[in-house]
Length: 299
Image (cartoon, one colour):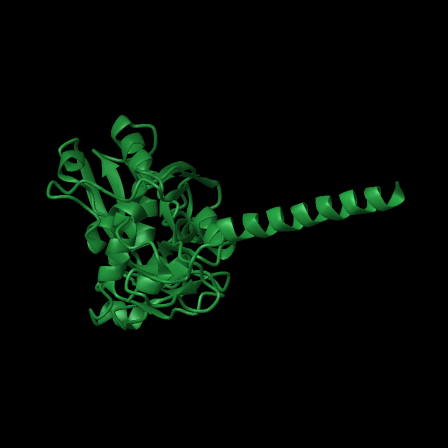
C-alpha cells in the first residue's frame, strides 16, 4: 500500500513539474524581432509604451514633433499605451519596467530613468539651443483680458532677469532679451495658476522667489494639465494658465493671450537597465503608432 501511495505521489509531483514548465514556456516572450534580430540583453520582445493623458501639453507636443498624428493632426497614439497622468507617475512607471519607453520634460529629468539620444543627439540645453536636438517645445502662460495688478506684477517677475535666471537654473532655456531687474512691488493678495504638470515645478520655484520679495502674497498652483489649465483660464477660474505647448488657434479665438516664458526639451526616457542609448526618431514614431513592438526592431 505504501508503495502504491509513493508511486501516486511521484506521479502527481511529475505532473506539477511538467505543468509548471509548460506554463513558463507559454508565458515567455521571444527576444527575436521581425527580421530575425535579437533584442538587447535583458529586454523581452514586448515594448511597454507609456504615454501621458489626453490634454497633456507634453503629450500634445510630443505627438506633433514625432509625427504620431494623422492627416488632420489628430493624436493617434497606439491604444494599448499605458496612460500616466503626471510627469512623476511617468518617471516612476518607466523606472519600474525595464521594457518601458516614455517621455518627460527635460527639466524634470533625474537619475531614476535614462534619457536616450534621438537621432544621435542628446537632450541637452546646448543641443536645443543650437537646433540639433529637435524634440523641444515652448513653456507658455496664458491670460484672458486684463489681469489684476498683482497677477501682472507676477508675470513681470517671471519675465524679469530674476525670473528668467530661475528658469535657467532649473535646466530650462530662458527667453533671450527678456526683462530687466525686478523691484519688489509691495502688493498683497493671491495669484492663482492652473495647468501643466511640466511647467508647475519651475513655476513653484519662481513663486517662492516672488513671495520672498513681496510679503503678503499667496501663489496658488494647481497641477491639472495644460488643456485643463487653459480651459480654467478661458472660464475665469484662474488668473494664469500654464501650458507646455503652444496655444491652439481655437484657444486664441477665445480671447487668450500667450506669453512664452521658456523653451524646454522633451526627453525620451527608458529604464536605467535598458542598454539602448540612442533611438531614431522614426523608431520612436513607429513605437507610438504601434507598428514597432519589439526592442529587437528598434533602430
